[in-house]
Image (cartoon, rainbow over the protein chains, first blue to last red):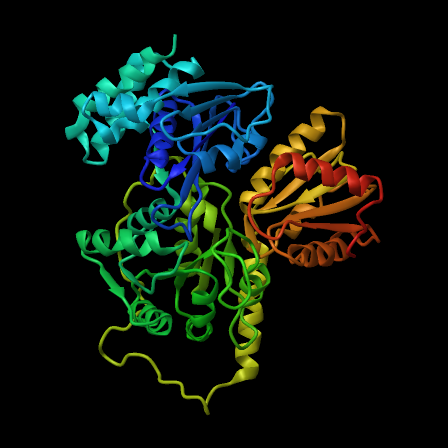
Amino acid sequence: MNEIVFAGFGGQGVLTSGLIISSIAVSKGLNATWIPSYGSAMRGGTANCTVKFGKEMIYNPAQEEPNLLLAMNTPSFNKFIDIIAPGGTVVINTDMVSTEANTRDDITIVEVPCNSIANEMNHPKGANIVMSGVIIKLLNEFTEEEAIDGMNEMFNKKGKGKFQEMNTKAMKIGFDFVK
Amino acid sequence: MAEMIKGNHAISEAAIRYGARLYAGYPITPSTEIMEYLSWRMPEVGGTFVQAESELAGINMVIGGAACGVRSFTASSGPGISLKQEGITQLYDEELAAVIINVVRYGNGIGTLYTAQCDYLRETRGGGNGDYRAIVLCPESIQEAVELVGLAFDLADKYRTVAVLMTEGALGQMMEPCTLPDFIETKRAPWGFDGKYSYKKVGIFDRDSMKEAVLMNEKHNAIKANEQRWEDENLEDADYVFVAFGLPGRSTKGAVKKLQEEGNKVGFIRPITAWPFPEEAFKKINPNVKGLITVEANATGQLVEDVALTVKKVLRADIPVYSLPYVYGIPAMKTIKADYKKIVDGEIKEVF
């Protein structure tokens, strides 16, 4: 069972990133849940969702002990760093995240300048897709092809298929970023 | 293949497919996506969608739709459902079939937006005046919510009563894979208005309340006898039996599995019908059980009252009944496990 928290400012695409990965899991026949923080969120405030997926039944869809955190901004890093499972992984957006407050030495931090990468490829809104590629490679559960197909299928169903070429490229760059 | 879908959207689409053709309501978080979805979806199937000027207007439009024999429903949360109570007791009184969806949020008064189960007593007792009861169904997953929407309309029609889908904020907002049902053929109930004044008018002064009371008890007894639904596991062998519904019920199932793996003799009952309460399940419980434990998302413990009453009625023994009310949210499996240990060690006292 994987438990992943995707967190950042509203507008950074963290809910979509979570949906991409849960959709890929479902397209492979796995169980998956996606649960957002909702309600009194405001523009510029923090947003997050928790995704769980695996072969086994998912009893509790809510946060328990994530093995992976995507932190797109510093408040998200500080908010969730203490609940990451020992041995877990934190993927940070180094363009925006300061890890100054970190006291954990039992986790792996993966540094990705995703805004810079997305700007360089002229797809500034694709920073979350780059991160999705990074996370999928780190999870080692899906092939690059499964990930790209799953993502494109998800966007097509939402009627957002026109960005397919750029999204595919962003996903590949994220995938290749992890050595 | 099942696809990821948001709970509120799945509920809405299920209602359309199970033949609902009138929706009237007023938006409120965390139920609003139901209205939003139906605002475009209902016209597609030739049904009627109304964003009413208030909850009160909305429920009265549902009375109108139901009186015409059309599958009619509304959805809201906490305070919005409070405003609809006059209409709900009226629906029951006129023996009109209708479905009410409560996407429960936490709190008294205007409350909060947190996911919770704090409306248990209100829904299971009937929140309006009189001594009516509505059928109350509580899903643990989006797939089950979809199935229970169909059951709610079927039971409302069968008993000519109100059926409530008591879901939770988190279940409305979350996504998981779900297979939607096929479309049923829509038809109007034969007892609906036919435009010809075929039915006898009954005014407030010429009712036979003694006779109506007998019929009301007969209806309630038939529902209790035929419609109890639940899921259970390992009741015959359990030292402790958990009782929980909805998303906390689902988390409790996970906690029970882990406790069993660690050698604890525990089982669970997950009510699917909150009313009628699944008393039948309690007949399977080990007569030497040491205690029953409710897991609830409210502040004071509500489900625990029905569990205690049922222990008295079915088990006829002075068995301790404990409650773990986690206020709001979905309790973590590790939290439930830790509190179970406190109960076994005597650190948490029984409620009854």
